[in-house]
Length: 114
Image (cartoon, rainbow, N blue to C red; front, top):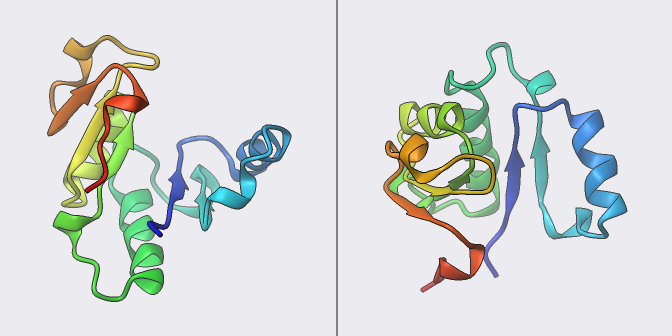
């Protein structure tokens, strides 16, 4: 199984109730919100912390193997500054605003796990 975590610019007390309401909270191994770091996106702090949490779950994990799914330009910038590869998804922005991502997709179904 591939572990999933959430790294968001929102506050964790806003994120967690939404996940619970959608009955998906248990699918994520951790939630990092803006309240967990000193500097929010587009600074890399949140993704640095996210990578460290992932590494506790998968000790052999390297940054090139830890993919980030992002729907914002600031989030993509933060992940890239942290040295993580990115997939931009056009949930809230058109693809031209997500150009910094390694890949851009329109739908989650386009992402293939190998």
